[in-house]
Image (cartoon, rainbow, N blue to C red; front, side, top):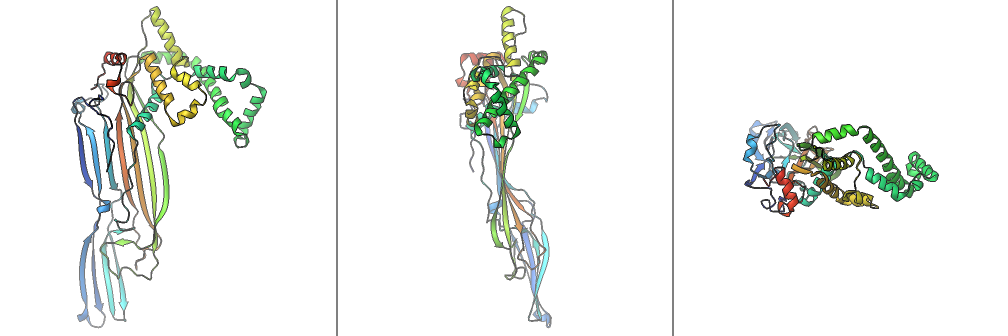
Length: 448
């Protein structure tokens, strides 16, 4: 078993001032019936003196299905005294958990079989115990999978960029910049309008160039224009709320769309169900046998939770009025010439953002500079789970054809919690410049 928690030195990164990272592990054995028994014998229908009887009991060999759980976390004694709904500082920390387990509780079955030979000898067997699609040792747990710290930091930056309270209502800077770059005359040319109308009618039949022009040209322009119009109408509402939240703790949560994949494969052919213990009377080589299918499901869930704070002037000096006006233009209309605007105006920057998070990082840096935006706490969480479900289908290979095993599901899952610094993910306190440290100190933020 392996994990990544974390690659940086926690104490030097400001993650652990006095907390001690602890490691706990435990064994997770399958639940339910794991021991079976048989009562068997032979009855001489002509001479009872020849009767025989026996009993046997055995347990499943579950080495391959004996799961485990390992947890690495930090001790935070102050958490026990915290009060719900009140801010007492960031009392949380990083967390890592991996475990493997069997989902189902194994039921106990009971059935009998008998065979009469030579017209006088009846051999019987009464079974009580588990019935499985295959022996436990045939298939083990699926492998773990989870993101690296670097990847989680990138997801955290993306989440901050999406939900931070200083996000603009509209994006007039990019809107105007794209109009200047593309040219209003070309954009509204009758021939361009005709092509865009064709795209909206039958997107599959138009040339790829025209379709891309619609998706990344006309469509964003129309959306930006609508957003700007709405911002103009409701600008007072946005600014009142924006000023009211200044200096306060603004909580935000952002969840990414879960990623799910599923694939079914046949992993067993011409197999009979598995019994423990077993007896020859229960099975018959002459009977048809079935198949075993495995459905592998992989799930990745990521979400962010954090508390932001920022500053906007409330006094009425000339300098404050100018600063407030600049912030209003940025907040309501997105009017600014910041690094993220320059990036968004760069040709094909949208394509680069599909593979990197440059735009998100620049957006976060810009808001930190304009509004003094910082995190009082921030965590990026990830939950990954891979499950293998084994299902038996077809004839069971037993004389008693009514017995079918329940599906067995083996799960490997990982839970990770990644902590942010006041200025985002992937940074360390030792890397902050004096200006960043002064802002953190003024807001009462520290490594603890």
